[in-house]
Amino acid sequence: MSKKLIPSLCPYCAVGCGLYLVVDKGKATGIEYMTEHPTSEGALCPKGNAILEILNHEERLKYPMKKVGEGFVRISWDEALDMIAQGMTRNIRKHGARSLGFLASSRCNNEENYLMEKMARLLGSPHVDNCARLCHSPTVVGLGAVFGTGAMTNNLIDLENSRCIFAIGTNFTEAHPIVTRWVHKAKDNGAVVIVADPRITSTSWMADIHLRIKPGTDIDLLRGMMKVIVEAGLADWEFIGSRTVGVDELLQSLKDYTLEEAAEKTGVPAGDIVRAAKAYVISPASALLYSMGITQHVCGTDNVKSLSLIHI
Image (cartoon, rainbow, N blue to C red):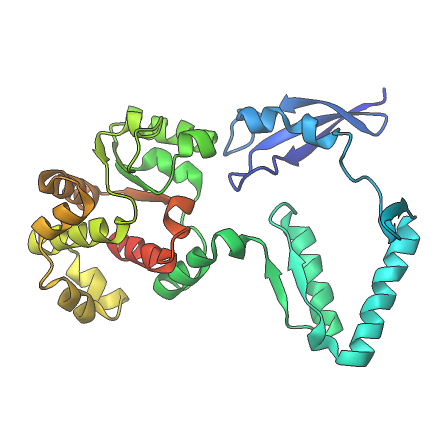
């Protein structure tokens, strides 16, 4: 039997849903759902279900191409690899290893990215980066400054156990539909869902509290929520004192900031800001979800830092 099931991951976003490719005579001819995958549990969003359109698209590159004149001609893998190796060797001899730069891809798996980094180090180049730092460079810097690492602190499965979920700068029902499954599971268990978004979206439909902030006022909203938490005496000062630094500076920055000012700047009623802040901080297991609606601003890094601070 020539058909095989090859386990794979959907490359469209960072959720990492699992699937099986049906491969017949070296060509992907179909997909089957990976019900045992811990995140997707056999589900795929429309993008994942359409993955064969990309794999088998007539314009997809399937072999190395070399530019000759105004066009490209097909060459063998051996010729392509030799060209790359010779080009890097010439460059190192002429300019040194530090002149080489390597850009890895979030569409590759961990092992492939590790090999890219390994090759760069073996050649003596310190310049290795990843395309994730383009769209989420504020995340890398912001989370790194507050938490010590620029990565999410929990896996998606933990959402099911959350008692309050605060989503800001994300319309995950459209952008990351599989995440929605875990948010719905949390809601079925009684979790409160807070969504901060200027728009009415399919994500805001499931919100218990929808904060329709004015575009660009994310930090004003978060400062208002911090003000509520501090003045209501709901902050965990023992945890903050033993695990963080700079709290005095934070409190000083909030000293003259009022809830009324937050409401005026964001366009969100003061009562809703209070409800959201108290629901989030009182919950024994709160989760924070954000995406590029937070990072893609001139103040994207400060947005991420503010989110991290309210999460503490």
